[in-house]
Length: 70
Image (tube, rainbow, N blue to C red; front, side, top):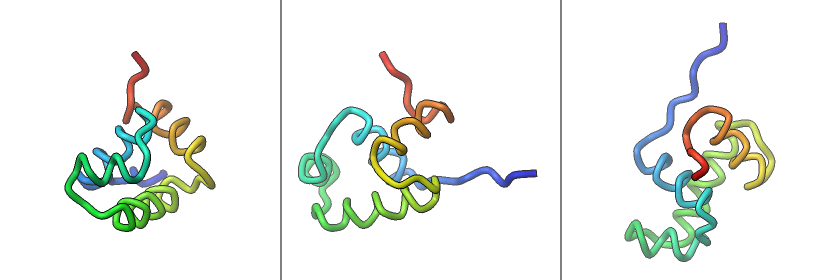
């Protein structure tokens, strides 16, 4: 059986903002972080999801109900 991937609250917020097309800088400003911190967390998210890029992240987020398209 596959173990569920767990994301921190901060990671989930970043996933949501990436899916809403926020840049790293915009995400950083919204969350009170540096853009480098956001980029680092985004890299961690990509690794956890086992995807290669932001397009893969968005597909994963939608498929796994982490983001709902409105």
